[in-house]
Length: 326
Image 1 (cartoon, rainbow, N blue to C red):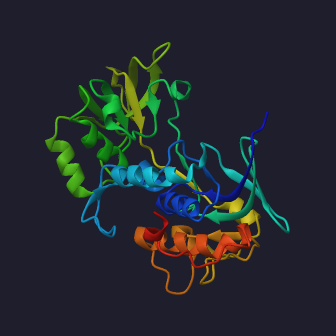
Image 2 (cartoon, helix red, strand yellow; image 1 turned 90 degrees about the vertical axis):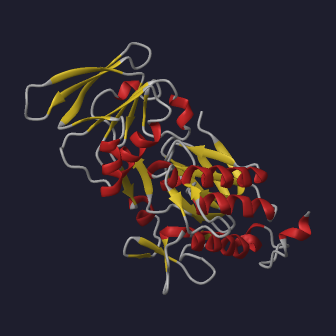
């Protein structure tokens, strides 16, 4: 049976802005459901650069991407949210006193207000053409915890920043790391590529994966030389497919949101043109918009405070100081 949830606020997007908004809505006394197409919270940070240092977060001179996500999740947990991960919001219908959201898995969420924090849109990984039946059984698109692959033979597939970053990050944990890419050239940052070639990571180019073996879990990866006759079978217990992601805004466009280029137009209170629907973070656009994580945090707080009276008329837009709530 399809899941049905009724909450004060539905947040679409579990990236930094969405996670901070989750905490802040809880601070204002709201119940929250968070919807995201990715199987793990954290948005682009968790998917693309969890091991990269981020330097523009207030109060943190430097923080790893995954560390920031973990801290935001700890903070968001105080709101006791319902996470609906691995599903995309595809339907949104505004009524006089609520908004109804439908996902591609059949889940329905009825909310007094909606906050869009969807970054660059519905964000889904490009699938590895072969071996998809091993997903969750050794094949993965994310590595939120490097220690999960400790002592394993790991094959990373891809040639962009995320593939090179995963290979380098896993090197101290895995028993071996092999990076397979179908081109001799990499699309990653030059410094990272230099580090890759100076590391113990085995680099195989130009090769592509042609099969994954193993009945219960991954046991081996078969690769074939692109435009050549070379064939190899690599022992492996884990495959990390880092082939990039697909961003899709088509659902939001169908909902009737006013768009400015590829972004959702909002006013100073973070309202969209749809009743009871607000937006914050990278998905938004307005005159003078600056796309930074820190700006997204401020927009998330502004949105939650401005939508609060829609959730409960007794709530004002002025929240008071968090230190007074202790």
